Image (cartoon, rainbow, N blue to C red):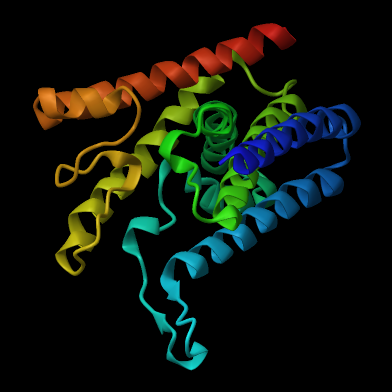
Length: 251
């Protein structure tokens, strides 16, 4: 356990240094360079996610490797809150905002990355809780690199687009948040019909208890609709606080 905590602290330090270096040297990068940085970050996240899925689902038979089995673990499905960068990072990098709709969505995705995703990444980096386990060092490294990349990307995108983002750009992140939330609820309704695994994307399922700090205590004490409202408002406020911090620091 002590060794794992050392690894965690080292990776936190690397993420902080990487954030500073990227923001310092590439805050005014040419468009092509910026796109490469964002896409390389996305590629690293994807590769580590593939590794995680394999580790969780491939069960090695130590006595006879040929008898090893594969069984997908639906609880590890990559659509938790912190997994959303897997889907929208390429859109941010490749979308040229050629019309009002794509420009609105791109600005919303950037604001979402700088607020909601940054908050989630920081929360796990500095207080991992049960996300950080003690039985697989590779998974722990994946956890820290994934959330470290969220921190690097969230801050870098804000720095890079600082001149184009307005104070109320945060509001454009809310529809993006809503979009991901609705998809999570749809998945929570469909997937449990064909698997017995715990499936609780965004930890908002009405079938399984929420395990997030604070919200885990609220979940059993209030009606589900009240819990969901607290969840949505709570995350929206957290994102707004994060945006205010970075906005007024750079003002």
